[in-house]
Amino acid sequence: MTLREMIQNSKRIVFFGGAGVSTESGIPDFRSKDGLYRQHYAYDPEVILSADFFRSNQEEFFRFYRDKMLPLSAKPNAAHRKLAEMEEKGILSSVVTQNIDGLHQAAGSKKVFELHGSIHRNYCMKCGKFYPAKYIAESKGVPKCECGGTIKPDVVLYGEPLNDSVVRGAIDEIKRADMLIIAGTSLSVYPAAGFINYFRGNYTVLINRDETPLDESCDLCLHEKVGEVFEGLMF
Image (cartoon, rainbow, N blue to C red; front, side, top):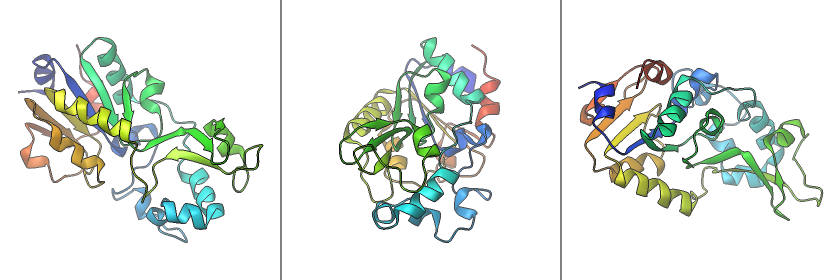
């Protein structure tokens, strides 16, 4: 059965996506051969993006964060646009994403569960005032609020818990789905990768450029670019 046929036979579809969904928008992923974690910095990127490092070395954290984590010029690609179209037509129930780039919303998706937060939400750790991503990008050193507090991106760093309400919403969507499309993820980042274990529906589809631990157990596995697969879908 083809992807299109599975979609046509389903009533409640959930999309679960990772970094590979945004690579066609020019945003590097993390663990592939060209990924962020294969590049060389004074500190390992996984160390820099940790809660402990943020507390102990904010200057270096924000230097890396501005350089590699703020792709403000990136635009939605074919996958983001098609998913938004599917939601608008009532084909797709929701998007559960590990990405923090906000491209699903930029494409028009409304029901998006951002497991790891968003670069577009930034809050003063002292007074709670909100700041847009552009403010962080244009600031120097450690970004400060007018009250003097440090502004922290609302992204989940290593060592921090996921947002409870987002987790509950995402798991509920996956539990109620009759089709789960998993795309652009190595399924190696937990606890997010474990969410797919809540799926009890009819079809599991995996779209990822590289092999994953789930390849053999899916109803359909496509080792292709996510955007190219979705661009070819017609409804």
